Length: 231
Image (cartoon, rainbow, N blue to C red):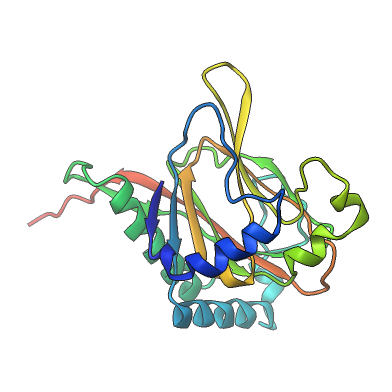
């Protein structure tokens, strides 16, 4: 696991996680998978939230409607603006350099189109693969619900494995079984970006207690040859 700037909120985060007995940051699969976590600074998070709301309030919003190739069950998905793209891809590139520092000089990481999910309660993203990409990411911009309240719902409280608001990465382990990593992020973790191999299946579970939007940005990085400079 690569962590970039993440210890900034470590104490708050793990206090919250300790209070939710059955909710853990990660599960323990048979085989570890490669992923990285980047935590944006507070002022960057605030800027990114403003960029996303500017996008959502744009009179020409419908022209930016994103036709998701991930079988997403989310009504409001829109192509990210240049400001959003610049912010999240910059963080993703910093993280990928830590994860893959030894790529040949003639190759470079190229971002693919990024989009913003404005998830409403009850909506979800089923297991989806970013086909044809090398690394993908999701960035949690805004968390409108309180996990403590979600955990108190009867159908959640009585569950063996409560899954409200969880982000999960699924993969096949060496035994041929399906394993997964689970992430539970709260308001204290807004601005966290998780980078992972695109072959993994990503899913986002629904929440139930808020009428506001859960804002999550998705995108990918592709390893390509650098353009040849002609003298």
